[in-house]
Image 1 (cartoon, rainbow, N blue to C red):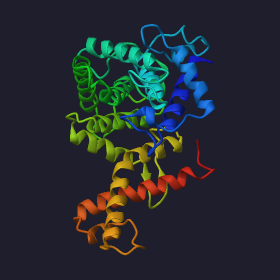
Image 2: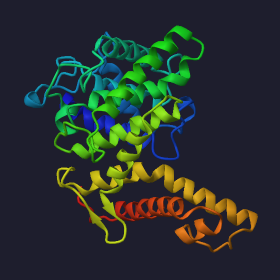
Image 3: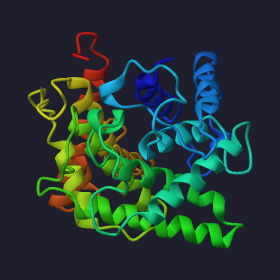
Length: 321
């Protein structure tokens, strides 16, 4: 397999294994079984790891290189690969690829620890496949996601836990500090919306891990992703997505997932209590009837509407991919 195709395989593994509502972040070993074709990909990933714990997707300028061990290692690909292994059921101590996850953590911790506090990225290496496809600062967002997911597995090792916390906080600060005014992340690549989506996921994962994040940065990021889809008109913005509607819609789906889930949960709870009729929809009106203020009801209802619209679009076979 050409290392330049590794990014696609990693995205596939992460998205399919860790689909919304399926991934168990604190116990990846309890995730659903992996299908055989994904298992084959996971085994290839494990074998492609370098001895120092890293992985590389290669340079965009040299996609002819097919040997996964003949490319430069990069943090984004390493974080991608390690999370794929975790979502397939391995942790730092358990699972068939526990040693791979552990080595990846050691490599990424050293990279982040040695990087300066200032600066948008954590490495000087440029033109990697993830950077060209998604954005120049994708390494920071992916490392933050990986550290957030590995943090629950460090409880019994206080020294290691501290290192992960410090590295995670450093990455989260970089993500927030280099966010553009519109909520996107500077240094966009071929499909910059993907870098911004990954940065948004990093902020959400950091928040879920109990870290002190910049709430304003998270809100700006969420609003930027929401802006890629108009649920009322069905318009999809693709100028930051290389003209690919799928990228914009999926980034919107990710950004609206938490609020959409919250809206649905509130309405369903009200139905169980008898505060709303069984046929009541998830809407601004329903949310207001159960006590939410105008602004809060509008925010949650809009997120739910966008999320549902995105799901319908993703089911459309004519969607541009």
